Image 1 (tube, rainbow, N blue to C red):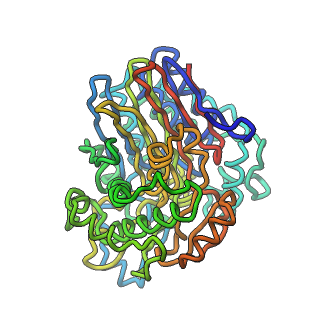
Image 2 (image 1 turned 90 degrees about the horizontal axis):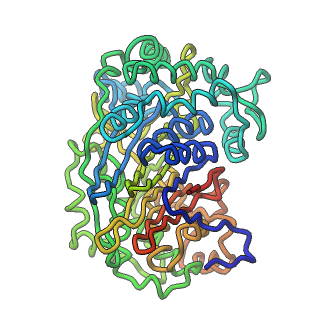
Image 3 (image 1 turned 30 degrees about the vertical axis):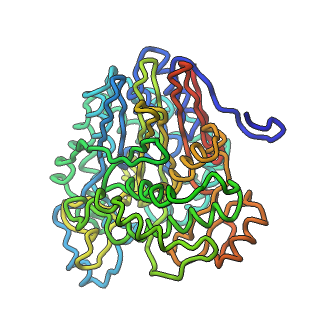
Length: 532
């Protein structure tokens, strides 16, 4: 039980259904779907569409999607609706232009936005409602307006200069004075509402063909990209076999590459060799150990993770005991490891949604436009804010994640689930770009090693690495005690106080014995968990 003298949230305990998202309007829309008889997938996609309107800096129709779905019979299926690079892109030509990386505010960074295809195809396969009904709440809000919430306003103000560079973004995402909206300002998106209606009426053809597709292709090409109508029409959504690993008797389930899901599993495998529960959860020893394990695992990510067709090693090989033990043996509990090379880890913005229905179908779904406001390029006619996931590629010749035509980039997006005694016990995710794998580990170790409920595990203070590289400083939240910081410094860690808090988690626990759901939502965002 939490200390009620502390100003924190209680977990939401429900019997029939529960939802958790990073915006209260999305949570409310998802819960209404469950209460009216829809299943967890119906609710999750309704929430995802809503978030593209109320959290436009994080997600939208111009982004990608990954999902894990657990069915009442125990099956768990994975889905990859992440976009591919334009088929005509040539890394040699890009290097010849003097590029050393894909510019993140350019048409080159725009891969096929595949999330809409994910919505439509998943609803057709596993939903009980149509895409028209799932999009109805988002269309209503886009047409009639909503009040901007505090965290969204906080994120928005930092991106004004980037949004101002592009006519569509300037028109739709800044006010007449060229400023970001403040908390409480009412925003409408009539062009986006029209696009959502086209999808509602025509399914994915309303997005990947016709006027919307024409506008996307023209906008990308006007900003230096190569994406065309043929690329958009060939959008794909693929089944993925989840990967899993045991952590202290629980089975943790993630998606395989091109996501970084197996990196979370690798960190957990490294940590399993240490008695984490004996360490103070807020002490320097715990954070030192987790950050050292993360540095090692993220170095593996930088070397190997890519579109699986181009990887030199499989997740199973990298999660094998010989690899894990070789990494684990490098950790010194009293001293930070010496530098072993930089790793480019671009930040990103994402939304995570989890829903569980009365039949105990559970959905762990993540939708993203990558960095804050994606590429910051919005189509002028149709109001589609385009992601920049192509910035996740590298241009290093011979690297498995080097950009190429029709290839998928490394993705930071990872929905997660966990089984206890062979039954699904948790559906969870943590947004936050490169932090996501480490965020899964923080959440899981808080639950398993320290016995926290999902809300307490989400509330707990966080530390991560500076996104400039693995050999740089630790980025600590303001809630980390000074004694912990001093203990980390004594072990050789440099640090600074993070400008933004790390990540955004949502989680639902399924307690089969008691017949209840326990849901938690990120206090660092504007969302909430709801249940009935």
